[in-house]
Length: 130
Image (cartoon, rainbow, N blue to C red; front, side, top):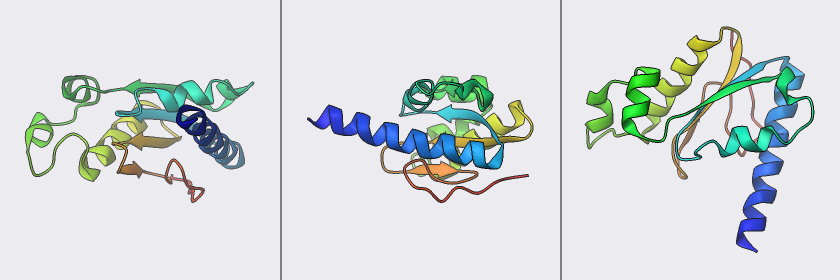
């Protein structure tokens, strides 16, 4: 029952994200951490999503965050900041954004924190970015 509820919530939120991308005529380039690619996988269940979904960086490990998206290891190793901090999730989103100009970017930190350049996964307050 819990797994089904999670799937239903994920599908609902992914549909909201897809609808926002359609409305904004945005392109989605995701930087996912603790969601481990679940957002991209859920979005991929929608027919025609390739019109908006460009891809996803799944950077679960700190080493991947650093090597693939250039997040400073000093921030990742800092016990006051760490890999799931708001600061790091913002940097993940910015790094993903630079990989594809003109994108609407989502970046996930952990189950408690989610940071957006444009909104928040799980809510409907999407905003466009330039």
